[in-house]
Length: 170
Image (tube, rainbow, N blue to C red; front, side, top):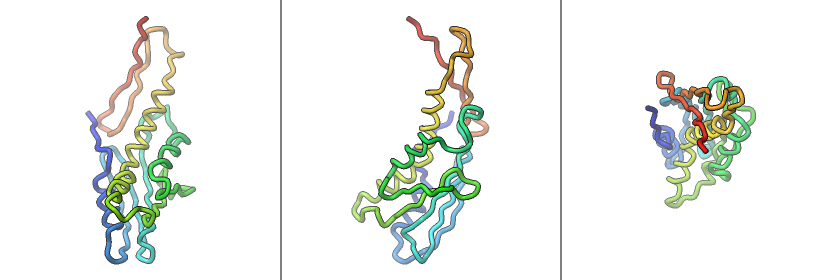
């Protein structure tokens, strides 16, 4: 069964390294995580507190959700850290979403770890909003009463799981 940590440890480590650097550093990393999630993080030495994070996540359920992110998912991502995270339009080639991270907006007190953790949880925000959309859109009109079609969810290519709407007993 798939079990994921809310925060991406590798992404958090890179963002902390960038934020806490004593001198300007240039970062250009590609990360691949469990479940076919791809991140591309870029920062230039000329402005190290401005970074770009591009994300590619395959749809959780093929056939129900489109390959691009829905307006609901975009709104959920905007709510992560509104003063730090901006959505870049259009997303970079090969990615569904590109975020501009204004790291200079992160407070210099102990809260910076929480803020960077919140940014590093972007994958779970996207996946949870996709799951909410799937569950909202479960349509039983095509099934006879008491018979519901299972929905196949694929978080990891080799480990799909199914959601089946249950009959409401009255």
